[in-house]
Image (cartoon, rainbow, N blue to C red; front, side, top):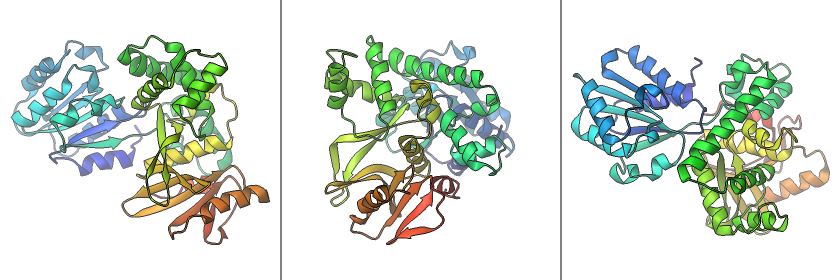
Length: 402
């Protein structure tokens, strides 16, 4: 197993704190492997195996654990003495699991780690029962930098490797089958179907699966474009793709998709007064390989796909990300953390003067002194336009940012 140090270090940093550690993210993004890495870390740091309880609820071995009472009894019988480390993988499969978690914290000297593949994990009673007592660790597919490490790639012909990353995405298991296109496509298709079926259709008991599929295709085809539920509804109705669908239904489906981590929404904010605008946010797919499976591997190197990669990288680096609006201009991303704000434009190329002027104008219109960057596939070196940096996207992705 190749260690994903960023995530493992977060778990190590939180070891023995009173917080429940909740690891969330897309299916097959590496959460189970991270749990096993952490178990190995504990064993290598003087924690006895008897004091580690690891349960993967996707294994048939634990099919008898149906509800919180079963879970409580199972764990209680495993606890011998001393501090216990409880690692629960895909715990949302257990009915009312959060009640068991609450009881463990009350009854035992225990350090708890849980994973889940949908946001219902955190919208359940957990937030009520354990308010202020859990910390979420958000896990994403591989960054481009991790992708190079996992594939044992150097930086020779880096553009070719970046195009491979755009095409197949960053799900870790892809690196094991990357030399077989047929296997890669089959794997990505299986993951996509699993997410749609288990985390959306089955969980929400959906009947209109055709509408769901059409919404997903619309979002994948309109990455980086301003979108509203009304806009989707009008498109599907006017083109007679899914007739008689309304924006309230679309809103519900969008919410389900977000909770499955297959899409992320970037709200629009007014840069001047920092208010969140209610309409026309943008949606991004959680992995470019998943996006390409949905649409059939076309337009691999288009600007909007690059925008998707940049958006996910900003999330990995811990920023809160929104789409910026100031007067009639729009900025692709406003990235904020407690220490800084960065404004970013993403463009396939700014070699044409018209395009360059447009991208620069959007950033120049922002009247503050925070960092402003244009990211492009152009091979630019330290270009600067009135304080606006122009940086190659690949170079930016390889920056040693935490």
